[in-house]
Image (cartoon, rainbow, N blue to C red; front, top):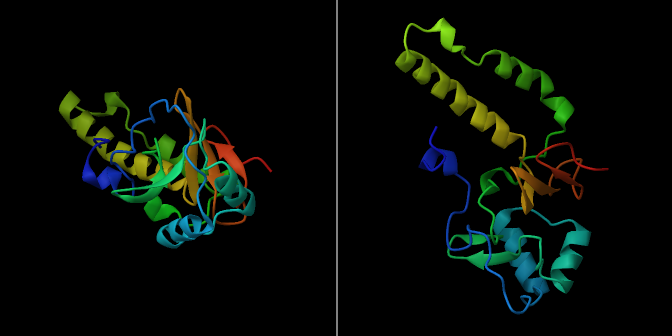
Length: 175
């Protein structure tokens, strides 16, 4: 599936804040309690206490994607990875989906099973679309707070039993 297609982008915020922030001469001002409450209400979540304290003191400036309001609503500056439609869904522990992921991996269509390239490509694109949905659901209930490069990001879990833990797209949340 084309990563820019509306179906794939559902729940994501693409606007003036989607690109990485430019270097700023001064750090942005910390958020107010009212601003944090407004963001929580719009997003349908309650931020973990330590993150709320950080927003009140730092406004998440620096290497962490800054929480701010844009034309698309509340989100993180430089973040086009968080699916805001999935924020209220509990973050899944990796043990909860490993068997399903193994089964999906095993169903990846091999090229040699198809009579021609076009038939294979169509089957692979259908499998890939299912895989993308599965991969996105693995980060339900978490926000991408920092891009670390090479496809690795730091996640802050905001719902479920792992709430308030940080993890990465490379592994389970730290406890």
